[in-house]
Length: 92
Image: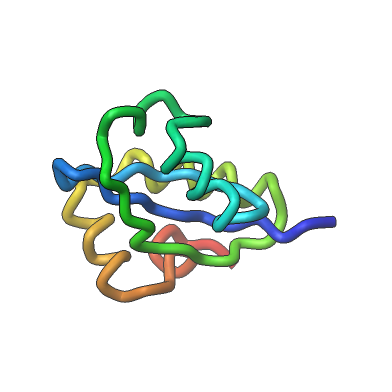
């Protein structure tokens, strides 16, 4: 069983993209090479600004869904804190 991670990528226009994966470095490289999420294509340069180990797949997708609904200010607070999304959403 692989560990899942939540990650945030900052686009050149300052927007934050939220995703989950089992390999953040591989996924971010794919984003930089315009593979994967269509949303990020043409929005570079990209910066990986946040990653946090979540645990299992089901929890990771639940958290991703919650974070995607947050206002940008709350996502920026998460980036500044560097960790703690589980506490912010009331997770385990």
